[in-house]
Image (cartoon, rainbow, N blue to C red; front, side, top):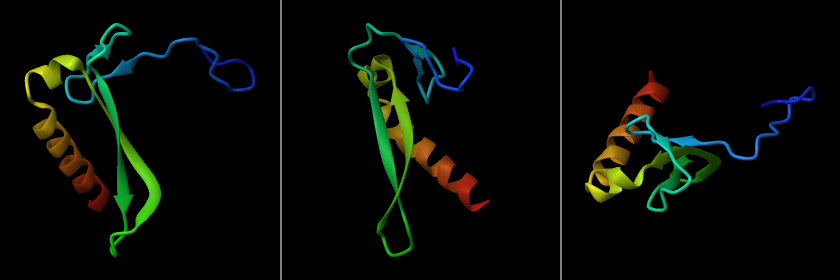
Length: 81
């Protein structure tokens, strides 16, 4: 919920898995959230990043590496288009 000043005042904001679009519950202790840094043409970090959250189920099935790779390539394609 957002108050009159525009500040978020919820105690718990659930996350969604970037790969499956399912909610990550508070009891999913195997879930991770990764920040992937953006680089410029010279390979220097630009103080910007993209966040990916993955559920424990995706990690348990061994799909997290390919999921992050596919999502990052899709993000790069959107940025260049």
